[in-house]
Length: 259
Image (cartoon, rainbow, N blue to C red; front, side, top):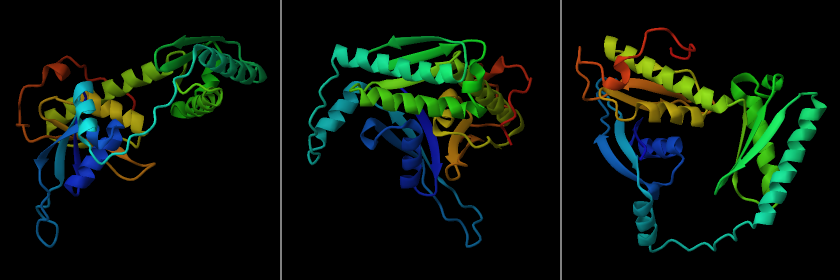
């Protein structure tokens, strides 16, 4: 189960920020208030933010919470897409992608893997890097358009479009960045702000550091400039031993996204 600690000016704001990071509804999480906000003096000295921990409920807990919501109106269930609908959607998406690749004169191998709720398209080839764009923005736009094609064809499965496992490599890079920054924070007792990121990337940072002793993560700022802060939690102590998850990291710098 995923768990993150989040800051906010009020408890409500902290909970809202956490739900946004996890992409979950209020019924799907358990909320623990770790710190109540304090206004401090009239100059703001001694002011404290609210800190909450959001823990994702397991499937059974989430279903129980939904059943207990007496005033919630029941929504009619969507009919599941038939096998024929799914295959037609895959064919439409593959034609859409091949037309784009052909017009761009990009040699490629296109494959689709289907799971219960996902269609995962992967494009490989020497010239496919042009489709990724700066920090994956072009790829994400292409994924969005492919999703529209699939949904218009009558299939409501989630669409993932990847090029040469870009997203997996990006995730691994972010996890390494998060852990190295957390290690640096514990060693010198400072908080660090990462550069602005998309919500999905911020979620990777939060999940990578969830439960690591001495470390607290939260997001600040407004979209599209919202960023993650890697800070020290209440259980931090100066010169404390490094947690096992961080102890074996080397000190080489990763992508420069900490400030």
